[in-house]
Length: 124
Image (cartoon, rainbow, N blue to C red; front, side, top):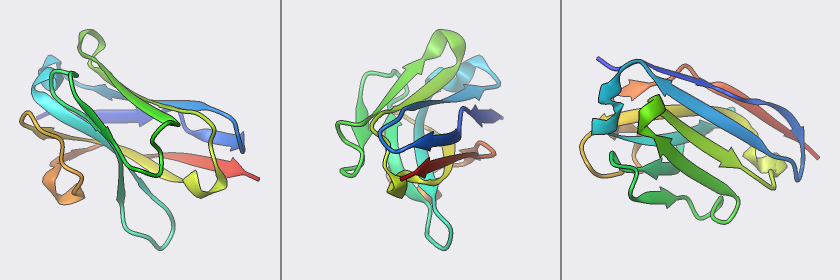
């Protein structure tokens, strides 16, 4: 059973950048599709971006297109979320998640494996 550890959050000013990392416990991460979700206080967990198991396809939510990039490094069992031009509305806890299979889902209940979350705070 794969375990995920996400990190890289912090406090940044609007317009700044952060890179989140999600490290998997085993090589089989290459057989999983991986996504990042975020959850602001009082709101549901929302899809941010996802990448297929081969890392050959990626999807991003409309609100982050052109600002966030997801990338998968199978040799390091790691998925990254590069976040540029951050906005105060990006403030949330960010979670990485994995699901078996070759496709990305934007629904949180399709993912069986989750990291512990990392806080991202963007000040105006």
